[in-house]
Image (cartoon, rainbow, N blue to C red; front, top):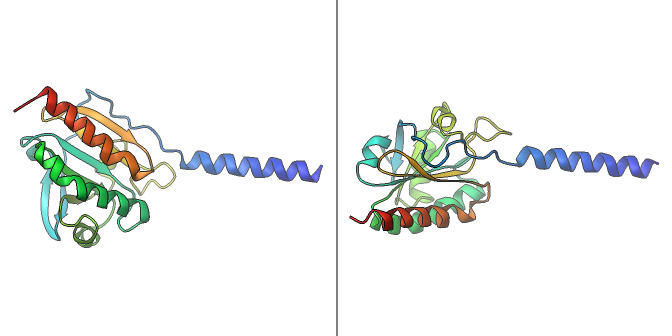
Length: 185
């Protein structure tokens, strides 16, 4: 009997733990208007004000949210986006990462992990995360790992949610490529 109680308790603990880490799906569906925002951002350690509307005038925007600078998954994702930034730029797309980190932290992260290839924006009050339904359920001060591709008309054309950083760059690259093929310049 004690053995079965122990097994049942372990199953409950595993189930609850797994449930807490399951990310919610992005609320912004394809065709939804992306909320406009301005944010303090850093590119190569230089602070500036990022404007989604201004970036969209140049082409599609790959907007990705990540939990925290200098953590394992976020560093992998930043390296992947840095490596792919030139390909995104060749298709006319801008990449911007967003987290709850302070601009001082992001100044360092933008140089070391983003390799001065793309900007990262500070969302210390979670205003942007909430607008994009990118809040991590278990830790609401942090962003979930969510990637969006936003067309120049301000509509979401792709969204992807996964705490695993592996497919965010590949998936958003494919979405931008499909958009570019349908909208040759």
